[in-house]
Every structure is written in C-alpha cells, then in structure tokens.
Image (cartoon, rainbow, N blue to C red; front, side):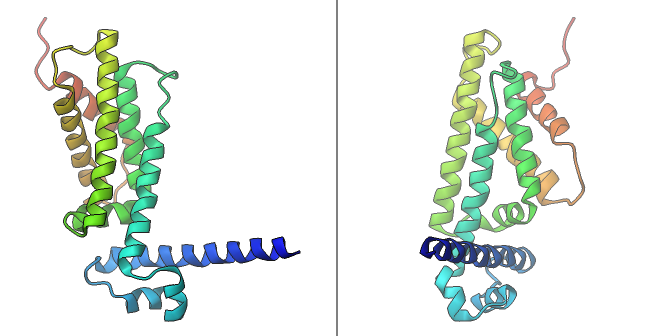
Length: 207
C-alpha cells in the first residue's frame, strides 16, 4: 500500500516538474533567457512560487535541465548510428548528421535559445556544450579513422581538423534550417550535401 502511494507521489512530482520545464521552455523561447524572470516562469507554470522552488531554485537550473535533455537526445541520436547496418564511412557520417538535424528540428525552440543566447551565457552552460561538441568531434574522428583503415579516406589527413570542419558545417546547417527558419526540410538530403562536401569538396571531377 505504501509503495503504491510512493509511486503515485513520484509520478505526480515528475508530471509537475515536466509541466514547469515545458512552460518555461515556451517562455524562454518567446522572451529570451535574459528577459525572462522567475515571476514569468511561475506564472506560465500556473503554480505557487513556493511550489516552483520545490523543483527549481533558479531559472539557470531550469535552463541547464532543458539543455541536458537536448544534449541527451543528441547523444542518443549519434550513438544510435549502427555501423553494422551500413559500414561505409559516408553512410555513417550521413546518419550522424541526419540524426542531429532531426533531433534539433524536433527541439527547435530550445535549439534556437542555445544558438542565439547560450554562448557566453553561463560557465556551466558553456562547459556542457563544449563537452558535447568534444564528444561529437571524437566520434567523427573515430569514423574518419575507420575510413583510413578501410582505405576510403586518405591517411595523410589531419583527422581532428577534418572532424572540426564537418562539425562546423553541421552547426551552420542547423542554424540555416532549424534556427533561422520554420519550414520543413529534408534532413537526409541536407546530410547528404554536408557529407558530400566534406568527403569530396566542390571541385569538378576530371575525366
């Protein structure tokens, strides 16, 4: 009996926390991080200020939790690439880029906040973003090294620099298709263009 009440209480608590997070994301998206106050967040959540503080002690804590959720989804998207399904380097890179594009598009509001306001926002935010970018760069380096092993990527390339270039291109297309516009787009098509450029450049092929 007690375990049932405890489980219900935990579910209720998690639902309330989710409610506050979702409403806060809407407010951040509409007004921006700096222009949003705790009062705005409390009002949007429809809870008493005391209840709000049971879950979050600051707007920074809410923002960090939202950021962790997005990074977790991006990380899962990258790790969800199955090299056994199609072991070619191009296919793996396209899958990574397409997965990230889909995930950021599905979380467009938070992605916009991060791209527009997160840089220099807070040391904790910057640390989390830098950590994720470092993880993604390492994943790209690993994929390139696999390509060298398979003989489809030149062994004289600077893997770190090349991975950083791909990452930069990825951030650019996220900005173009997710942050700056609301229109639907084809993640696979954009991923194909990014990887085709990264792997082959734009020079005309000679006969």
